[in-house]
View 1: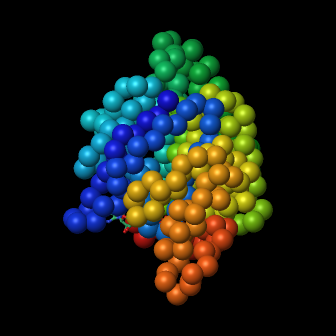
View 2 (view 1 turned 30 degrees about the vertical axis):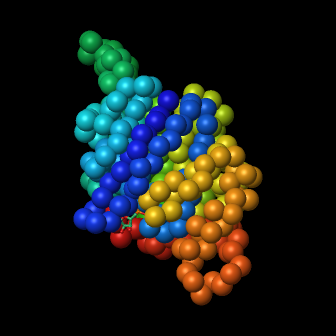
Length: 278
Ligand SMILES: Nc1ncnc2c1ncn2[C@@H]1O[C@H](COP(=O)(O)OP(=O)(O)OP(=O)(O)O)[C@@H](O)[C@H]1O
Ligand SMILES: [Mg+2]
C-alpha cells in the first residue's frame, strides 16, 4: 500500500533520513524504532509531505505522491496526527472532530446536495464525532475549547481527529507520549481496534518496547537516518545490528556489553515535553 524508495533528506551536511526504502501493506502494523534523533519523526514528515525530500519517492497504492503537498497527500489517504496548532483552538472539541468527519465525507463526495440532506449529514457527523470522543474518553470535554485541554487530552484529541479522517495509512508518532498511565491504554485500545480492521496500514513510532512487542507485526529500526533492521519482531529484537545500533546511541561508556533493546523505552525528549523538532 505505502512504499518509500530511497527516501532521503539532508539538513545542510546532515543526512537525517538516509535512502530509506520500505513497503508497508494494508492490515499490518509496523513499529518504527530507534534511538532519539534516529530520524523517525523526520521519516514521517517526508511521508506525509510536511518536509520536502532531498531524494527518493513516496508511493501510495503504486502512485507516486512525491510531488504532492501535505494536504494533497492527506486527501489521498496519508494520515498524520495533527498538532494543536493545526486545529481550531477556539472551537469546541466536538466541533473540531465534527469538521474532520465532515472533511472526510466531503472528500469522498458524499456531501449533501439539498439543505435537508446537509442537515441529515450534519446530524450523522455530529453523532460520529461524539462516538469518537467517547472512544478516546473525551466525551465530557466535548464543549471545551480545544486550546483549553490539558496536554494528555490534547493528544487524545489528536488521535480522535486522525480516526475521524480515517486515512488509508495511519502515522502514529509516539501517540501516548505525555499521557498519564490511565490514558495510555485508551489510545492503545484504539490502535488495537484499528489493526483488527485489516484494511488499514499502520505505522507506529513507539519507544515502549512492551507496546511494540504486543502490537507490531514487523519492526523497522532506524539509526542515524538509515534503516538498519527490518523484519519480524522476535527476529529484529535478536539481531546484533540492532543491539549495536542501540549501543552506539547509548554511548561508548556503555562498555562492550550491548544494552538490552528494552532500554529503547527510555523517555524521548518528546515524551518529556514535546519534541524540540516540532
Ligand atoms: N527541520 C530540521 N532542521 C534541521 N535538522 C533537523 C530538522 N528536523 C530534524 N532534524 C534533525 O534530524 C535528526 C532526526 O530527528 P528526528 O526528530 O526525526 O528524530 P527521532 O527519531 O524522531 O527522535 P526522537 O525519538 O527524539 O523523537 C536529528 O538529528 C534532528 O536534529
Ligand atoms: Mg521523534
